[in-house]
Image (cartoon, rainbow over all chains, first blue to last red; front, side):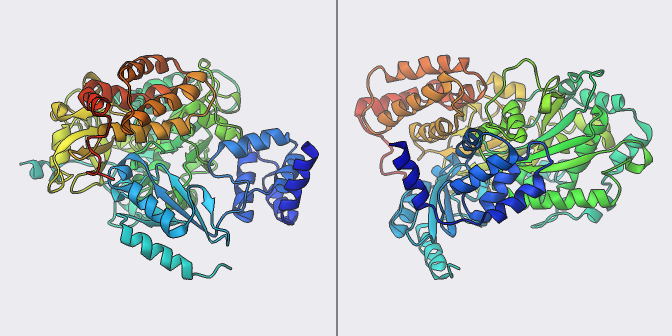
Length: 170
Length: 432
């Protein structure tokens, strides 16, 4: 049974270039507590942590794969599956909640056709409900990658989706 | 009258701010920046710096309000090996964004404050643990650290004093629990951020098993002005004789100006809302507020004249916390607001101890069914029992998470009862 699972996982995973991971590891190899910066840089470079990369990092840093997966599944930054080019985050913290965040979330769901923590099949959008983004004075708040959109309205949701629909994927 | 007072209130943290951008290193220098550090290195012993912080009455600005000088004094003097200072900028408490504003506007203040703290504590290697998502703040900090290095205020043998300091910036991979100081230390070491057992306290055995002090951004940013103006002057910046210094209050919710203000500690809640915040929005009346971030019990109209300082807010049954005030108007369903908070905490429980891991989802379930109109007769008693039970968790997350539930039970039990009796949310349709 476990063989079947393992085989399936490997089938699904596209080829990854391990030399990128090697360059990252070389940079941090002598620093104590290097696991976090290595995984963070790998997440940035690959857009997620492919299984082969996690196993490769385990081997080169001489830590158990279980420890790596323990860290990967604990922290919010790490993802084990490919993500969209544009990560849309809508804050549902309390300050945003009382200013109408639930309606903003619903409108994004409708517009994108995906739910929380899901990615569109074309890998254009990933949608996440998050709390708290730490800009409560601008509530309700949304972010697309590193761009911040304050005082969100249903109309602004339309504008944002239309804007990022037009941007090139590559 | 109020406007007059606010206009002439002395500021130390926002004094050097420029509208809409970061203050440059040269601007900060020309306005007295790094004078405190140069003075301390030239003419004060480390003990004198520590004594000044003790005398100032400074209490930690990260939420717990522990006296900063006292925390420093717990570091043993004669242990071999290095010791560390960590600046906690893992600002993930919903409703709190003061450290972001401080770092985006004037990161130099933190660099100088950390250098002073390291001098007092005998630290040669310090870390800034900054949360995920604060990219601008982290970028500004990198600029500030590089500029301070360039001017000889960091690095080897600062200003020929024999004092050396390296400052590293570590960006968190993101979990609320990382704000707990022992969990933060684990995160910095590259493992899962579960809290550690105390004792030993970090002051004795922290990062890599060495003595470690963890202080909040705002706490450390205040130290240059304590040294510059003297502890007595700094203490006197507060609004009441009992309070000490200024405080960053970051306000959100149904007010006219939801912004971050530096105000005297001990200013009354009503004065803050009616003064700098410009009052409630048109059509809104004040119903309640969270006084200091998501883990603090609600204050209501009854507390309008409570001085916003650690002890008076505690006396009112809540906590000053981080100074992140979320203001709710009459349209807010307090059950739904509490449910929103509990959803956050239940998700962010690190899973280490049973009361928190199992208890918070259970409380969330109870609140969900009350809000959905399926509340049962005994639900209020169950909630009350869990406020008591979750106090016995491993760290402060679960007791903090139950703060809003405690506030709900103490001030809005009738609203809870109304949900259960009517089998629906009375605010249905008035908010989304």
